Image (cartoon, rainbow, N blue to C red; front, side, top):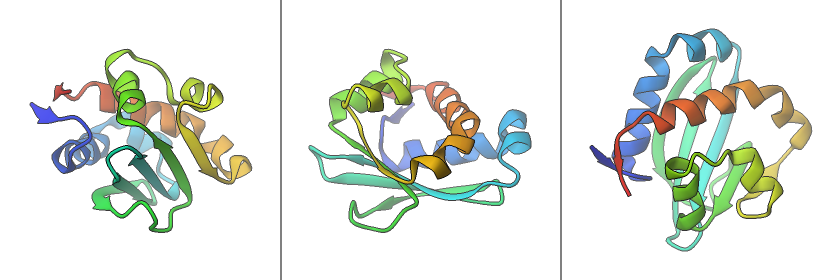
Length: 125
C-alpha cells in the first residue's frame, strides 16, 4: 500500500496506466502535461504523457504544464476515497482548473481512465 498523493503513488499510477489496455488504446496519440497540486501542502505531481507513454514525478506547483488541477488535500482525497469525479469537483469550484478547456475536452475519456486506474491503487489516506 502506498501513501495517497505521494511520489510512490504517482509512480504506481504511471506504471498501471502503461499496463492498462484501455489506456494504451485510448491514449496512443495523446501528448500532454497534467499537473495535480495540493494547495494546502504545496505539493505537486506531473503526469507527462508523450504519445500515450506516461511518466510521473514530483514537481513544483509553478512549473509549466498544459493542464493544471489545484485544490486542498481534502478534495483530492474525496476524489480517491469517495469516488467523486474530477469534472464535478472542478465545476463545483472545489478543484481549480488552469489551461485550455477546448484542448482538454477531447481528452475527457483519457482523464476518466486515469481516475479509474488511480482509484484501483490501494492507498493510505
